[in-house]
Amino acid sequence: MEQGIFPSKDAEFSVYFNIASPYLSSNEARLMIDPSKTSSLSGIIVTWNDVFPRSVNPDTNTTTVTNQKNQTRVDAEVLLRDIYANIPRSLLNENDKTTLHLEDADHEPTPSGKPTNAPVVSVAKIIHRSHTLRFQNPDDPNSHAKPKGVQSVEVYKAIRPVPPSVLETTPSLPPLTENDFHHVASTGRYLVTIEHNMEDVGKLAYYLVRYKNTRGEFGPFSQVFSAVIA
Image 1: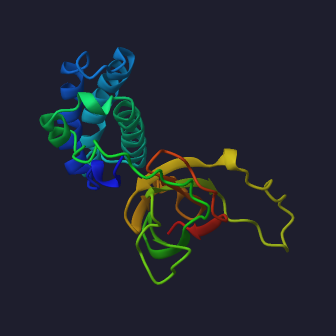
Image 2: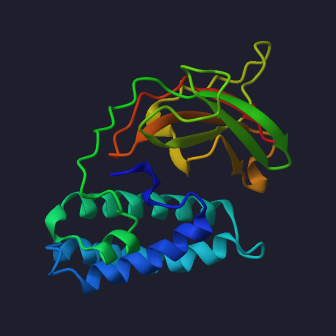
Image 3: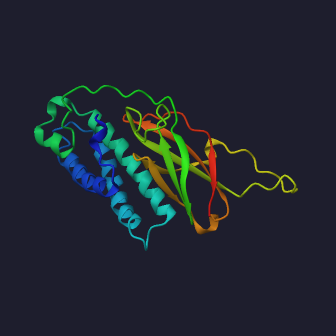
């Protein structure tokens, strides 16, 4: 599938999702879609239509809401791509292609290779309770463009207290592992802002990032990096 199926902005994706989901359900038999998948999609859109409005409302947006919104979008895109990949191309009419953004679906796409490198990451800005992260192409550090075939950068976070001074007797924490991190953002842009809870101010946020291609395959994780939560 082409990389541009899904709008990059959440507001535009919401419009697309609310058109695509009922369209797929109503054309399920004609397009030979597995009913269990349209059922799952209907459940995801209920969650999306609950959490997305709360994520854009300053009175209701929290780190938890933002994380849930990001994960729901990831779940939606993965399932939609799976559905599209299994629709026989001969069944798609012009309205299908236009509505679902599958204009080039009659042509066999060039498979996107699994990413072999992690993004180059830096902290572009630190303000109260937020970090803005910058991503660059490891093969072209002067470019903000994603490598060919990459759909998004996936961001994972772990929170820990600032390590004690070597002069103190407080025991050090065990080393972080991948299991200590949780997914906090999925972005197609070169900048993303990660929000933190008030109780985490003064602690360290540790990050891992990796690329995801247009087939949902992940590349290797970056090195762990950290920044103080101001």
